[in-house]
Image 1: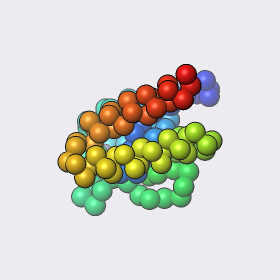
Image 2: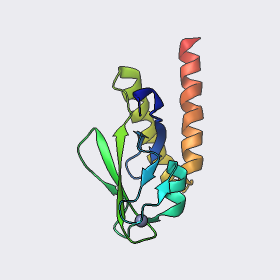
Image 3: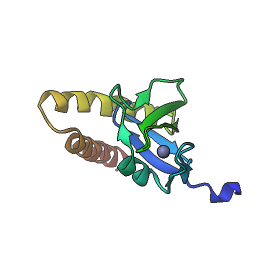
Image 4: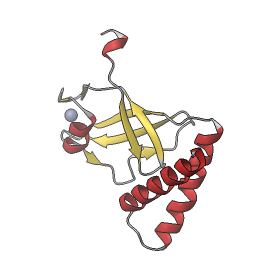
Length: 129
Ligand SMILES: [Zn+2]
């Protein structure tokens, strides 16, 4: 397979709060040979480990572990997709701070993330104007 056929999927990792990219689909279970075409298939057709799905790992990637229906543990390597310019760093700090505040108010994670994203877009549209 040539590089142009590699499909990267953007993934938001709840555990690390990081945007990640994976390029390992389709993925095949080495034990039962089941094929997972996409990450969604992979999540739907595997189950979470009791100890949690993610290893802390080195900074540039996170390992995600899932159990195949055959009982074998599958590992997916997720690459950190974050940028490191000033704006991206400021954005992460803003998100981390606001998400923590909203979590304290009892707002659900997915809702909070959407709210903070809108706040960030609004603040930046004002700066640009
Ligand atoms: Zn399997």
